Image (cartoon, rainbow, N blue to C red; front, side, top):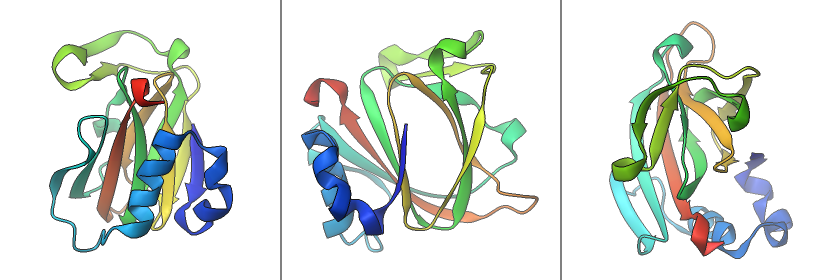
Length: 157
């Protein structure tokens, strides 16, 4: 897992694999405010972005998830959210396996779940060995979030 600020990414860009750089460069150059909701290809199915707007929910309503074929770059454009995360090898029982059709698998819990708050302008990179619980509230009140999730195919790295 990597956490950062888009405002700093130019200084650290050379530290990332080329495919992740392409995803981050997209965030730097695209009109993310005007980008329509839904899926947009950056490099075909190898790198694409999904744009969503939603209100965060209580942590208890959100599920832990992991991916096998794709790395997530989750970027908060507006709002704030907490994302729980931990090592996949410490996850407990599978509650739903949708790897074949959606590249996502859900788990009941993880032994060590760290809560990370992302605010506008921040991003987090989740690898296949990172379990994560996105879209959680920070505190008692929901936040309206506009988020871009860039999916980078593992085989593009």
